[in-house]
Length: 82
Image (cartoon, rainbow, N blue to C red):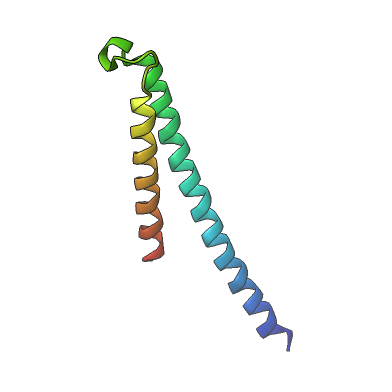
């Protein structure tokens, strides 16, 4: 009688692990793109004269964030279709 109870626990744990790994995958994709954007901002800074402002604009960090969110959503939808 303990066999069906064990099977349901295994299925429940497998579902939990699937969505947990998907969350870590999304966080990883976003963080990699954000840090890549920050690196590119340090490597290729936008001059203050280009913007006419006192501070520089973190363009590559902004673009990296957008790319990271977009790619993480793509990966999440792709893995949900499986």
